[in-house]
Amino acid sequence: MKTYDVVIIGAGAAGLMCALTAGYRGLRVHVIDHANKAGKKILMSGGGRCNFTNLATSPAHFFSGNPRFAISALKRYTPQHFVELVERHGIDYVEKAPGQLFCAHSAKEIVAMLLTECEWAGVEVSLSTPVTGVKRLGESMQLATADGRLEAGVVVVASGGLSIPTLGASGFGYDLARQFGLAVTETRAALVPFTVTSRWKAALAELSGLSCPVAVSCGDGHYREPLLFTHRGLSGPAMLQASSHWQPGMAVEIDWLPAVSVGETLTALRRASPKRRLATWLGENLPKRLAQALMTWQEWRDRPLAELSNSDIAAIEAVLKAWRFKPAGTEGWRTAEVTMGGVDTAAISSKTFAVNALPQLRFIGEVLDVTGQLGGFNFQWAWASGVACGQAV
Image 1 (cartoon, rainbow, N blue to C red):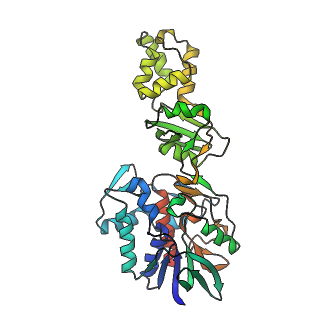
Image 2: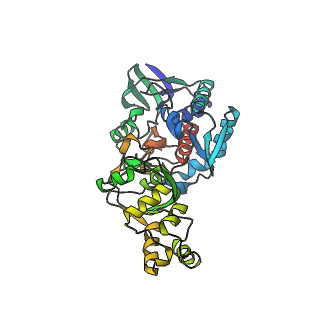
Image 3: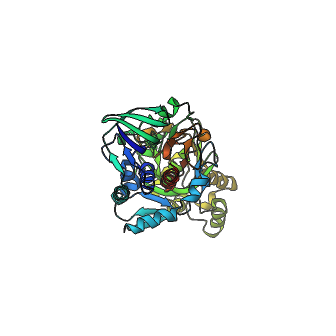
């Protein structure tokens, strides 16, 4: 039986970060994963360029049953710390949106950086090696794997959530938590596109591929991001953000013209340019295909602005500033970027990530009930929780 100070289950962002941190402290560290490649989710993220952090990261950008849980780790390992690591490895990056940093070339550079650091830290990495069992063995832990048994002073679970099962995602971490008596909060797909009812599917499919900036509201979530029409429904950053707040039966509200005061603008134009037509004005302020679709959906008659009454303008404003629809559902785990919910943090130390009643067992990253908004926040949580745990094992 091979013996290590730390065995980390999961060769993703959190697991590799924890491993290199612990390895540099002189510990014998072994990372094990059932996947055939390390960092699969890193490789596909950000369109293959990995939105590896967000400079504006704060606890306010995360969802959790315990909103204060993430504060300690996020304070101790900031986006600037990770940027310094990226720069030391000579990786070029770009800021595609305020605070959102992406690799200039390929996400492969981030995975290569983490694996290089693990090698320098003396970390062993075993891929294509499923873990079939974990049990307590006195003051240590024992793991059964496809390659035999391992003994570890500490086992760190960094197995991720349920999102994108084609990359190997599974409920392993949740099952292991339950085995040791930990609660797991309800899980659901988040940062995921919406599907629509049959009433809207054909209409929206005609706009497939069209993108436009909107403001979206769902529950207590409010975002100003681009929206993307797909052949199945609505996607893009605006809808992905809204999905983290959505529950079945809830409506999503879209402001098609967040930068325009529609009522005031149309009233002023009615006086200044009474012959201008409604369809013309819509086409000047929205993508033409969307303007035409809205005219059809709302059964608006194209007419000069002079013919619009105050009540007509109010009705048009209500639609353009607060268009509501009820999604049929979401695309589910297949395309979800993250898992909402997870291992309940009530029984986990926010400083060491150890299970309070069993310090030989720890949970980090997405497997925990901590989920970030879109824009690099989930990777920053992976780095921060990995470092905090690696410093404490």
